[in-house]
Length: 247
Image (cartoon, rainbow, N blue to C red; front, side):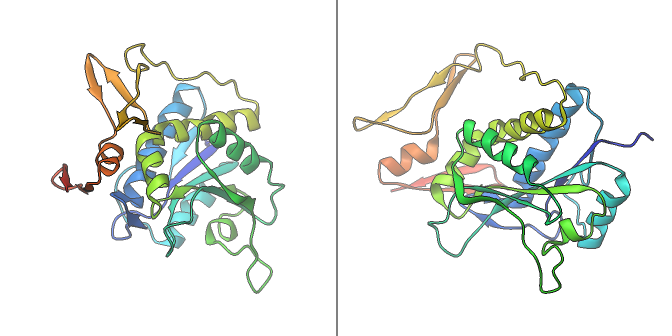
């Protein structure tokens, strides 16, 4: 088996759902992001691996062992943030205390270009009481340079809307940044003209921030944004695949 240059880690999984809120479950969204990035790196001719491809449970030592033993040079560990306050928002990137921080800075710039808000302290590292890396994904992954990507706060309604509507664009932004960092040729994904037709929605004279799309003659618009603009509440049942709107 060839040694991958990059390994992508979808955080949490199985019995560990991660954070949840505003109709987002962290373990599922980061798996979607990771699978998308895996496919895109493959398309770009890069050697890449995954810590998990399905909704399985990985204990911390199992996860870090997979990363450490992969032989990869880099690891992207995908996460969605949460906070006790619903005002916290924006993406952040956490790197090892032994990293120069160049890769997460490129990722942050690329994600901002894709339209995501960034935290005031966008990139940082953290030490524990023993002056080691605080996070086990840095401390226990050996020589693999790991960047923890927190794409936004699912506990913030605006962040959650952006994540639901734009997660593929955000995932692609990380792909683009990584290619730039390692000097690998980057080509944007092919998007058909029909899928690129944007729909703007105006509610009571105010244009909504989140755009819809026209795909094969069908108009798709952001249900939550429209309903909330009209004073309604929205809930999502992932098992029943049902959106419920109440006013």
